[in-house]
Structure formats: C-alpha cells, structure tokens
Amino acid sequence: MNSVIHTKAIPLVMTAAVASGLFVSLCTIQQPDGVLIDAGQPSGVFVNVDGLVNIPCTAPPEANVRITASEVKSQENIQSFSELHVLLDSWYPALENGVAMGWRAVIDGVPYDVMGAESDSQGVITRMVVRFSGV
Amino acid sequence: MSGYQSAELKLRNLAAANATLQADLTFPNTKGVPLFMWFDTQLVQGDIGVRSDGRCAIYLHRVSEARQARNMGQPNTPLTAIRFQLDVISFNAEQARSVANDMVAFMNSISLCSDGYYQSPVTGPSQNPNFLLNTRQGILPQLQPSPMVITQDWRVWNREDFPGT
Image 1 (cartoon, rainbow over the protein chains, first blue to last red):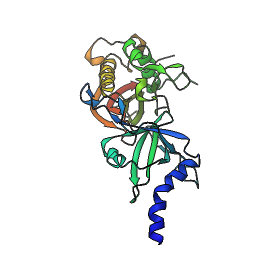
Image 2: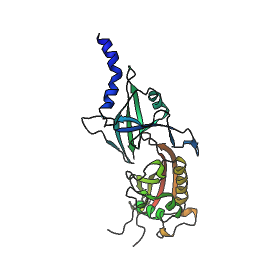
Image 3: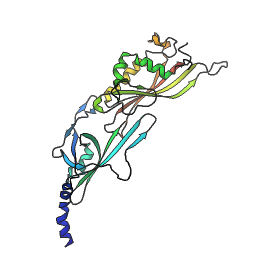
Image 4: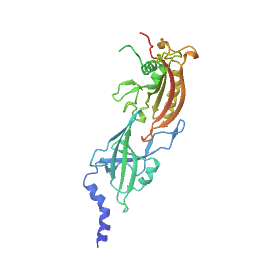
C-alpha cells in the first residue's frame, strides 16, 4: 500500500516544489566551445548546452548555518570563493557527466564553476554545488 | 625620511617610465581608475578582474638580500645582492608569456647600481647587474578559469645609497 503511494507521490515532489514559487532563479548550463587559441589554451568561450537553458532553480548559499564565502590568503595573492547549492526544477541526468567535461552554470547572469552534480535514484531531482572564485 | 629609495621603488619607477611595460600593465582597477598594475608585494584583490577584461599584472617580493662586505673588514656596505621573485599573471597565457619577455628586455636596460639610474638604459654589460636566474610557470588551479602565472627569479645588484641626495 505504502509503496503504491510512494510511487505515485514521488514524481509529484518537484511539481509541488515548483508550485511553491521558490524557484525564482534561472540556470543555464554551458560547455566550452572546444577551440584552442595561441599555444593551446582553451578559448574561454562557452556555449549553451541544448535543453539546459533557463532552468528554474533555487540557488541559496550552500549551508544555512554559517556564511560560506571564504578567502584563502597567501603571500602572493588572496583567492576568494563562495558556493551555492542549486536545486533544479527537474531531473537532468546529463549534468552529472557534464561536470567532468568542464561545464559551467550561469545563474541569473553570473557564471559559476560546477563543482559537482547529482541526481536522486528515483529520477526526480538534480542538484549541484557551484562555486564562484576570484583573485 | 632620509630620501632612501628601496630597490622595489626604483624598479617600479623605472618600469612605469618604460613605454612597453606601460602598455602591458596599465588597466582600470576595481574602481575603474587606470592603474599601472605593478605591485610591490601582493596582487591587489580584484584588480586582475575576469578573463574577458584582458588584464595583466606583476607583483614581486624580495626573497632574500645579501649585503656585501669589503675584503678588509667593513661590513654592510651599500651594495646589496637582492633576489626578487617576480610574478606575471594573466588569464591569457600567451599574454603573460609576452609580458614576461618584455620584463627581461626591461631588466636588461636598467641598473640600480648607477647614481643616475634614471638615465637608463645603461651602456655596457659591466653596468648591467640584473640576472635572470630562473623562470617557471604555474597556474592558480583553484580558480576557474585558472590564470597563468609566469614566475621569474632575478638577482638584482643594488646600491642602497643611490640615488644620492
């Protein structure tokens, strides 16, 4: 009995979540254009991945306990990082492999490095940790 | 202030007067103000910007300094042999390599052992006491994209008492 309920309820989880109105951000997944310039450096140009454009999402800070923005200070420079926990509005399994191909996520116009992506075993949700870094 | 000028100050003053390095290193900083991006200790946070800004910067620090001694006794003469580590950073690897090459030409044209160092370039090899000891490259891998850093180790002979007052 319970398994029947679960089977029917699970696919509705994200429908209900999206209906809550919390998915106020937009995420576009991009991949490198594959072009090398000069002595062999990637061009730094990214192009949208088909089917992964303007995905509604939530993009809060990774932890809600304490601020996660961080800096690594060295003698030569100061590197700063901040991470977001991104929940997409549906299941996007291609993202898990995309992480290994240098894909990035542009969330509300800001490009982030995708540090990891994972989906649930029921094929309902996909979530990512993305990072913005600077020096 | 006694009028003392450190080797770092002399180098920056000379570099800022070098037309090639001026073109290589002048970019708007985080406030949008054009800045000669040569830093005497540490890269200023944010000034390198993002890759599309096309900026390049140099920062150096003094690895060591050996003060020379006269043979017959007097220690701490004004002559110092300084090792500088000089880092050239850019998101564009070839730009960093190019500026590093310009740095070599620049260092070959100056002397910090001449009282008239502002009259550089010097005229002969015996007055050319800057030696490039080593060059290596690296990146800042935690950043995406990762900027290229070309590191040069320089041995610079410097007269601490110059410029004279």
